[in-house]
Length: 102
Image 1: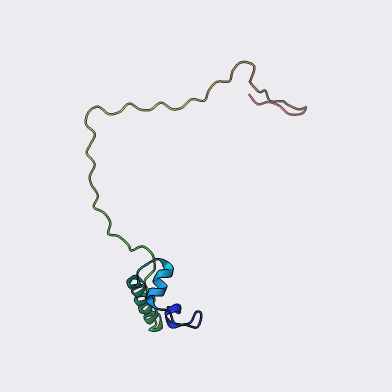
Image 2: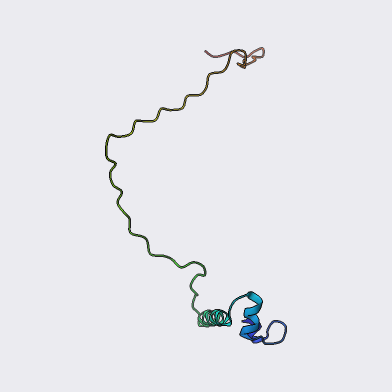
């Protein structure tokens, strides 16, 4: 909008010039200009414009999953921490005055 109206650089630019700069067609620039103009009109009229970004999609219909056929899978065993190797076990040092609880 600023380039089309001459607010940037002082000169009005054509749709073709702006499109070449951004690598899109002049038709796309025209569409964006129209969209921006409509948003400005809505704001000036006191309304709140629609949020920009992705359009909200309709939720997809959920597909029911088939019940698994055959026997139920075996439960997974819980992980057991490895036992320390001989000679690598760290022992806690107890200073004087501290007691170990059993």
